[in-house]
Image (cartoon, rainbow, N blue to C red; front, side, top):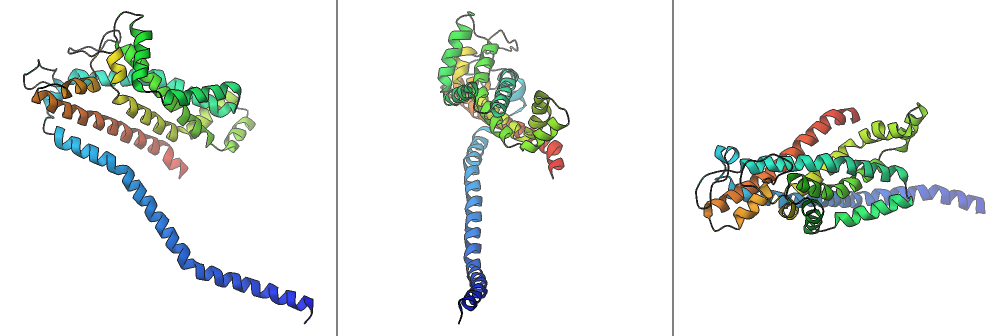
Length: 304
């Protein structure tokens, strides 16, 4: 048999061998695929277990104390039954709003700059400092905020607490925004620039809008992180047993009220601490659900 005939036979046999091997490997590949899908679902379920357990435990311990008075009345003196945390709930919302108004624009702007500027020296320095600040303990930020914003002014204030919480939000929002902006296809930027858009307008109206869902998620994670922080507030806000909404005065907050009530010897206060914890985690959950729904309703349909 000539060499040409042998080569022709080998060329004809090779596809059949490949098809036979592929057919024999199909059951194994299907089994591996099913296993990996199952592991993925199991990992997703395990990730939800801590939240479900925490929320269920708080529901069992704090639901019995919740009432209309809890949301509408002020705290009562030590040892007396009844009362509520109306001032602390409003104070928490004020602190979150103040921190978000300060931290979100700075964090989103810094993240957009890091994503658009590449690996310049300034961008590398900002990225490194954001990572360091993101891992800084909250009590250290609280002490720094006390030294800078409380001791220099001479009194505690809600504004100082908002600034301290904003400092915790900025690095997380910065890094999240950078990663989300990097996922935007470069073709969108090129198309906008080809239509005559300036670079800054392209970044603000095209890139940010495309990455909005991920940025909103990062912002919600930052809000969830600061909503339950106590250490920075101990050094900046101090707390207030009376009704106060002024930014230049001490203000009540749910984490501070929970901290004080949980360490008290009174059963009624400890019961209200459980109820306050339930309200706090529910507040974060509701904000997250509303924001995700609004984002999906506005941008998800267009993507589909």
